[in-house]
Length: 161
Image (cartoon, rainbow, N blue to C red):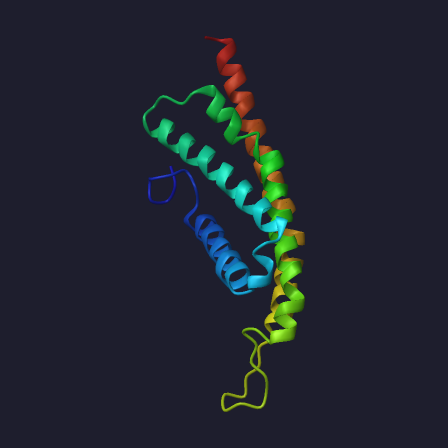
């Protein structure tokens, strides 16, 4: 189980995932009304929703010590499509928001000001998009590795039953 014993996930990874979703929903989709009707929003929301239904079904049945193979298989297989689908939706939504963020100067702070501090939200969003380049493959291939480990173990276990 995880660090708190509730789910088998790292608190750090779970926190990162929750914060990134809050960021995408609030700081991008909610804040830039023009992107709310983009198909990319539907793409990431559908991917997230299906992922969470599978994840929490997996956790529930695991806690009950009665995990159907179909749910285990779905947990370690459907990410192959859902993860790239969600990431694509996220990136396309951020990209669609960029011109509106730049035009409005949304969440940006320019100099001069009494704090002698500047922040360019447009550049920050671009950095967020670039950060997907090293992060996405690492997480995706970690899940591929987990899939091989968990499902091959299940297959071997089934052979002896």
